[in-house]
Structure formats: C-alpha cells, structure tokens
Amino acid sequence: MDSTARETRITTAFVAVADTLTTDFDIVDLLHTLVVQCTEIVATTAGGLMLVDGDGTLQLMTSTSEAADLVELMQLAASEGPCIDCFTTGQAVSVPNIEHETSRWPAFRKAALEGGFHSAHATPLKLRGTVIGTMNLFGVNATALSERDAAVAQALADVATIGILQERLVREGNILAEQLHAALDSRIVIEQAKGMIAHSLSVDMDEAFGVLRTHARNNNLTIRDVADSISNRRLSVRRTPEGISIVSTSGGVNRQA
Image (cartoon, rainbow, N blue to C red; front, side):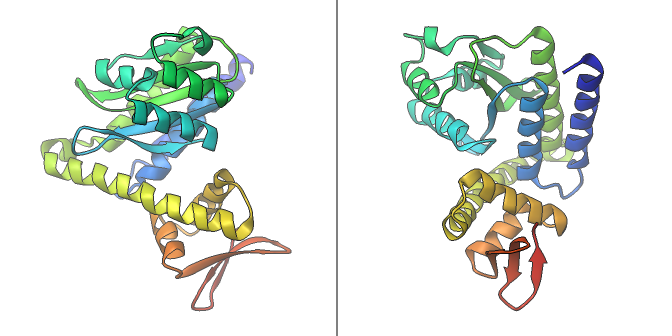
C-alpha cells in the first residue's frame, strides 16, 4: 500500500469509527469496525478486542475471525498472553515472533501457532490511566509492527475508548458498569444468533456475523436487536436464488444480498 492510499485508509477508518459515536451508538459495531479497520491498515491477518466487565475481568467482545476468537478465549482461560500483560500494565505489548516465546506464555504460544499466527501486538484501551480493555492484532508472518503502525493502532484504540467512556458515563460510574455489562450480554445473544445462522445456512461463523451486521446497518438496527429477533424467532434467515434474506415471521421480507 503506497503512502497516499494508506493515508486515505487511515482517514476512512477514523471516519468509520467516529460515525458510530452517536448518542445511541451500537457498541458491538463500534468495536468490530475498529478491529477490522485496524487489521487492514497495518496489514495484519486478524484481530480481537476485549473489555473489562463490572468485576474487573476481561471478556472477549469481538474478533475478525474464528481463529482469532479461539486464541483470545485461550488467553482468558489461561490468564496469560500479550493481551493479559497489556491490560495489566496499560502498555502496548509487541510479539514479533510467537515461536520464540517458549517460556513466557506457553499456552498462548501453542494456541497461536496452531491458529497459524506467528506475531501479535496488543494495544491498551485506556483514558486518564483507566484501562478498560485491549485490542489485539495477529499476523501470519513473524514480524513486528513498525512504530508508525503501532501509533495508528493506538490512535484508533483511543478513539474507541473515548466513545465508550463518554464524560457523562465517567461521572456516573454505575452507568459505565451497566453499559459494559450490556455489551457483554450482547455478545452472548449475538453468538447464539450466529450459531443459528451458521447451522441453517451451512456457512461459517464469520459469514454468519456478516449477515447480522449487514442487516442491522441496512435497517438502522443494532446488531444485538437483529440477533435477539433471530434467537427468539421473530426473524428467520433463508437462502434464495437472489441471495440471503432475513424474513420476518409475521410475513415481511428484508433482502440481505
């Protein structure tokens, strides 16, 4: 990617993330947009993002692929890995060659290599010393992010942090906790709907999420709302000759593709 194209992509990424920072922004869409845009700009393969819940425990919020999903969940289960260190210290953690990490994070090393990843970079989401999560990027090549790419990742993470920690929510800590709890609840609902779509259409989980996200954007809904309607069978998904359709059980049809 030449410098002009890169600068255009960076500008587009900030606009895309900023577009979600409205009064009733969809937090899942915000975080997914952040990770997707960042992985593309810095030429990594996949990414994931974690947020801390009301009990101070990291929870996986979104990822760009099932392979990244598995690596992220393993880190949480084992309480080890670059994202854990990043969250604990509030500092970015770069791993240029995962294969060399034979003693620091053995469980992470095994899961990452099995997923085809050979490098990682974890970026903190923090504001005024408060760390609320981490964004984690994975690459198939053993190479470190350049200082410039690391700075872009941190800048995008900062934008998302500002969106999550709006001033009125910071002043009312109970509202912040409730918002993060609602975001974590949303992931459970979305994962259930993804599973239903994947099973009914014989597609993978990544494509199932794309169906949810596209329908939500096309119909000015949150991803959680669409997922909830599918899980509770107010909406159903089917494949037609024209593409994938999300169908209201009351008879209306919303064309997905």
